Image 1 (cartoon, helix red, strand yellow):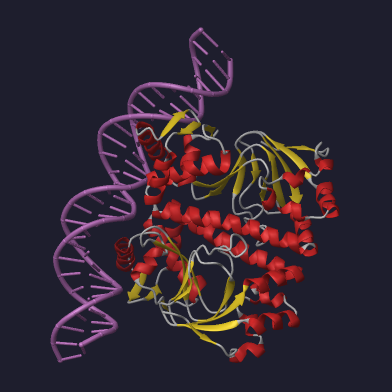
Image 2 (cartoon, helix red, strand yellow):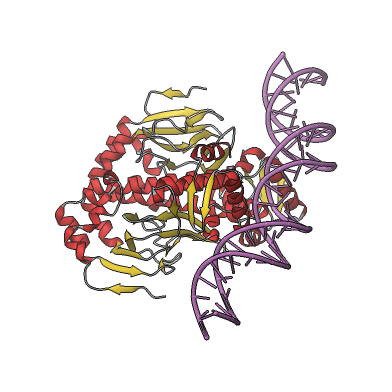
Length: 241
Length: 241
DNA sequence: CTTTTAAATTGACATTTATCAACTAATTAT
DNA sequence: ATAATTAGTTGATAAATGTCAATTTAAAAG
């Protein structure tokens, strides 16, 4: 289960691959670095490849790195007492993983695990700290990124505490379609257990809600592939909780 | 319900009262400003007084200010559909309210309401942005502060989703004693409804758990005052969920 | 000090959700 | 290909939690 570290720099490095580590150009914090600063980052980064199922970052270990996902899908989850997990987020190609203790007590607050094969870059936090000092625009953008993660978590928290299961499943399906996979029949590659862990319910309960949605012709399901047939119905379900 | 704005600068301003806007000296982001920077901040800030129950910041309005609590107790909560509230945090004397959209879409993600009388200072976000640009240490500390808030929210999220009601109430009581009121019989000044809103359960359920704790001699309750008699028992309850 | 109003408490009951066990389908290993 | 293992599904049931209504207590207003 040990990640295989590829020592040689990735082919794209010279091409500033980190510049593309976020979908939305405007949101990419690395856009705000000068060429020299980017070189500094790129020079010392490590390119690491993970197989599906491998742990990329482990909760309660020291948070010494920031990770850029270059390709693949990973899940971020908080591990609770006794096997309990809460999947907070999925991260796909061009995501940047900061937060979760990097700036605080240096202890990671969550685990990140590869869902598919994952190609990513590890960058020392120290480098980031250095850039925060040097480049105020970068610091500001990092604050923004942090804030965005905060907001997503807040909405999650509110949804899970205030909504019944159908509303939560509806929200999850909309989130998967509109924010993660960006296509309509989409293949989650996630097990039912993992999907359930994103909504804070048991697998059995999740399956039952999914079944209801199927028989109401709101969705079609084939294995880990989900097709949303009636998005409006999901929106209504999400609204009313 | 309109806040009464006291135009004249507060008596302590000349004395850099903002320097004391956080309990823990080490955690106070204003410690990292130079005298000149602090002057800039203090000069244009507004001192505002709120009566108990008044709204200090309102969810979904523009996030144009950062607020320092100088005295009193306030609650931060997210408003859901139809009266549903989730109290995320209490803030007491010397807290700084950033986050919740200040650096992002400029829309507040939560409401802040005075529980007791609250004396606070409003500072334009622009001033903060200016300082982030000028002073990288300050930027770094602000990132830390943000991160700390994130972590607290994450723990909250995990607790509420993975624990049964007794565990959640136990966690809440420990939180109130050890992180907010810092004394043992402590007077929450919060209604049962508000306490319930901190744990994501109904008032009736909350009262029942409290009653159980009382009859097990884990706590003693007198109105809004709570006395923790057996902290270890609460820790065990919180652990096992 | 009484009246009025709001908050806290309790009980009965309905609903939601989890747990457990059985079973089927799919995947992996032999 | 077949056996063994894992993931997915279903049903029955129990436990947790919410809802509603009634009652008590406390607080505010007159």
